[in-house]
Image (cartoon, rainbow over all chains, first blue to last red; front, side):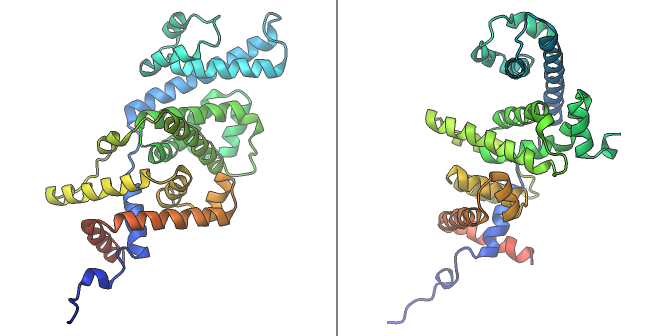
Length: 115
Length: 197
């Protein structure tokens, strides 16, 4: 009995080149960020960075603040993240997870910082 | 003005407390950082958070960044690490984001029939990529989306080039196996390869 020829079984299903092109084309469809959200992220990033800079300065000047540089840096890292979360409405609920630093009044901070 | 300044100069200005320099670096690299995070996590909100965290780290660690080296690998490294952390946590919580894939796919095709066909194929490819182990997925994204060499990926992920090569090989074999099961995907891939010459 003569075996039926099947073109699909005669050739490799996905040769290297075809697979490479398929993967590259698919991955390059990954969306760019939308301009509106980009502007929001940029604004809150800069606010957070400014806040950190101010915080760092006050931490180094005020005797009531942590004296060691390491602790001051830690405080600033928390502050920066907290600020970034608070100023974005979408993320506000997540700020609850960052109540590591109870001296901040989140609502007041949000009013001050909201973009 | 920002276009004239090198990355190194902007990082130096950032060290000196110039927050505006962070804005210029953001404008230059945010799309790249965001797309990398999105390709790995497949979640636009998470990609946004990761990209933001990446630039916050740039601000935080500016004094320690070696300005004699290019900045891009540093940004990729932070993005990949943050994405890796997020994926690991998500896997622990066993939350599936499979449903989001359809929302995220919006290729701009010309004909409706081709759009449906190619859209389906791309969904299939994305699902196959998402099914890869995170280490393999990162290598695939950096290689095929960002167009990075094996050496560059090794530098970013801080693993030997041989390991990158091995991860890429096994990832491709797994993808080939999964995608070969679908005739239309194979035909389309052959079409792409022919068009690419």
